[in-house]
Image 1 (cartoon, rainbow, N blue to C red):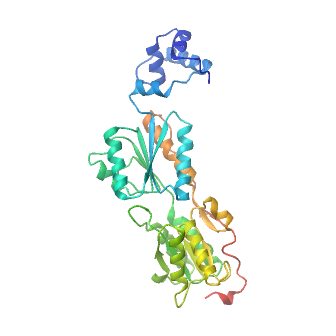
Image 2 (tube, rainbow, N blue to C red; image 1 turned 30 degrees about the vertical axis):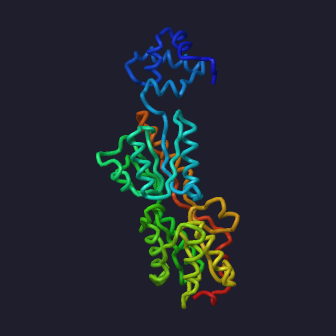
Image 3 (cartoon, rainbow, N blue to C red; image 1 turned 180 degrees about the horizontal axis):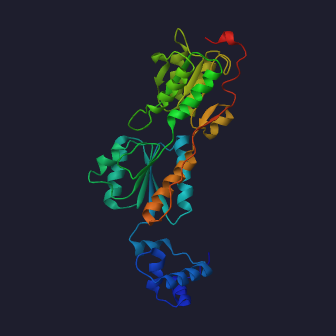
Length: 342
């Protein structure tokens, strides 16, 4: 970019007034087609890019997108946030991040953003859609896109097929001749504790297809953390008829479950097989078989969708996110002795 080129340079080279250049760049008023083409040719030749401050003054926008994110320490959410940041940095919009640890904090952020008009659009990650209607009874004051959550009051929801994701994990375990498979689930909304039925539906579907009895004592909802996985796995492994396989709803829970297996002197992949969910970076280092979710792409798609709506990009379509994918590593082992399977 030529930093010396200004809007005055563009106007002079194109033989038009500064106001005409502004209308071409912002789409804020009528300009003859031939004039528009001439201005854009000069913009391209001079490699001129309007300043963010200038766009704010001309359009009345903040030129800022917001992201409402639960728990920065959760690897999966950080990957979604990384996709949001990458897409925003490639646009003319800056990004403001708001961390959420409690339901009332999410509501406070939403109400503040609505009053202060600090953002032109907002991405909400994995938080209950009910927050939107509670904060904005008359409707959101700006476009909102939800990621990994069902938000009826948002203009769009970017999600993933969690039923298929957990189905892939449970089917893989059943295919290794495990007959007692447990599910360690987690709240879908980490702030309100809201549960999602989708992963349990996928687990049940895989068990039914393999003619495996579904026991309610083998389905546990635990905290979305390593410690939560450790405690849940301990409860399951201490049952009179314990599972030989654990399908976990996050890699963090799976890593905790691995600790519980080893703490009991059991061999991972032989006595007990474990699958995770998300495929965070840490999963490959512990050899965790897991379900990869398109977190990065989901974040990028959410920002693309917002910009399409804000900038009125006719004909632009929201890009579909890839489906879940099973990533096989060492934590499920091999079927070396079927007599060990219950």
